[in-house]
Image (cartoon, rainbow, N blue to C red; front, side, top):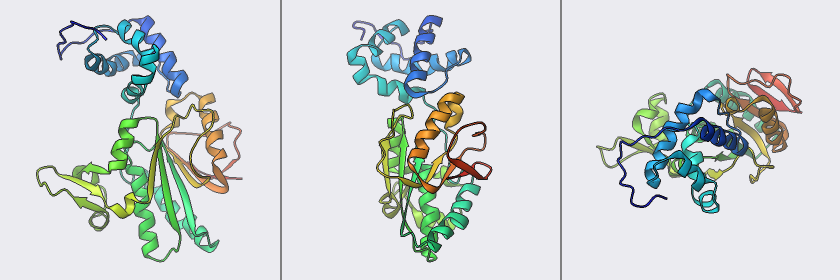
Length: 284
C-alpha cells in the first residue's frame, strides 16, 4: 500500500485495458462472472472504492497487491464483494412460493416427510431465505406437519452478514401483507431508524455460509429437497451454467425440486431434470 500519498476522497483513477483484461479474466475464472469489455467502466467505478480504502493511487498498484500472497489472503474477498451484484426482494417471483406451498409441501405431507431441507443458492442479503420461512411457517400453522430448515449461501461475505443479522429497512417490506409483517417482523425500538428484524423463531430455522459456485464440489451440509437458484445463472456463460447446475443436482434428492429465474433456461443441457412448469424442475 502507498505511503505518503495524501488521499482525496473524491479521487478517481482510470483502468487501462490491460489491467481490465487481467482482472476480468481472473474474476471469470475465480467465480464465473462474465466481465465483457462494456463492463470496464462499472468495474473501474466499483474498484475505485477499494483503491480509496487501501490508499492506493493506481490500478497497477492495486493489481500488484491483489495478486501477491498477502493480497490473496486479505483483499480477494473484499474485491469479490465489490464486484458481485446483489439484487433481491421479499416474495420475488411469488409463483414459486405458491407452487412450493400448494404442490410440493402437499406431496411431502402425503408422503409423511417430517422435515424438508431447502437451499437458497445465491441468497444475497437473505430476503429469499426468510420468504421461504414465512411461507412454511404459515403452512405449519395450518397443520402441514412438515418441519423445515433453510440454508443460504452466497459468495459475498458482506451480504451474508446482513442475511444472518436479518435487519432490513422497513420500506423493503412494503410488498408483504400486513398480517404477515406483524407476525414475522419486529420493529426497531428507535423510531427514527425505520428498520425491522426477522423474529428469532425464523432466524433459528436458517443457516448461512459462503460458497463459490466455481468450487470443485459444493460443501453444503445436506442433500436437499428443494433448491432455489434464481437469477444467478445469468451471470455465467453456457458451459459454466451447465457445470454449476450439475453440481446443484448432485445436492438435490431424486424427486426434489429446482427453481431458477424467469430469465434463465436449461435448454440443451444434459441434466437429470424434467420440467414441471416454466422455471420449475424435478430431479429424476
